[in-house]
Image 1: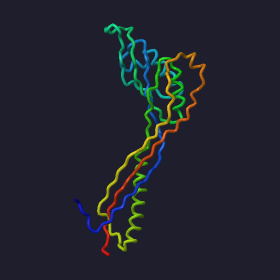
Image 2 (image 1 turned 45 degrees about the vertical axis):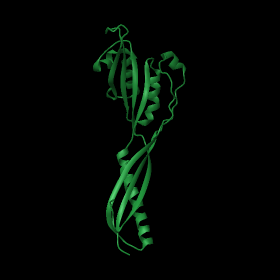
Image 3 (image 1 turned 30 degrees about the horizontal axis):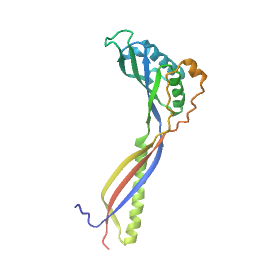
Length: 212
């Protein structure tokens, strides 16, 4: 057993809620033809329609990336008429765009939004959390030392740990395989998207103390 003579140990935790700063939307598009590589962004009709709608909204073409193509064929032979599933990643640098982007994806006949990957300014939050936890730990150690009648001489050992607790926003599960006419007749999804999670920073500090 590791012993730490003439020390006191204090533990402190700080919790900080942070909000997503940007996000990635992962979309699957069913295409009626097979086009490989970046050419799919222009030559696969269903994909190019989605890209055109997104760029018309204001996204840069570079914000839409092709991740892969799954070819579907019933005969076992690859033909020009074979269908394909195109997997795309759409990068949004502004959270307030997400609801509009979901609307755009929903308006496409063959597009399905698979999931949203939220991105956070975690590094800054962890730094702030660590500073706050250390401050709490020091204040607690000073109170303990005063109650015991000893003085703090320095830090003997220090440990920290960080984990996050993400709260998912309810997402309206729905099929997005619908015609443009159907999409036009339906109201906007009107999503209020404000995704957040809580960063927990824990510290264990052993302080060297004077004798009684």
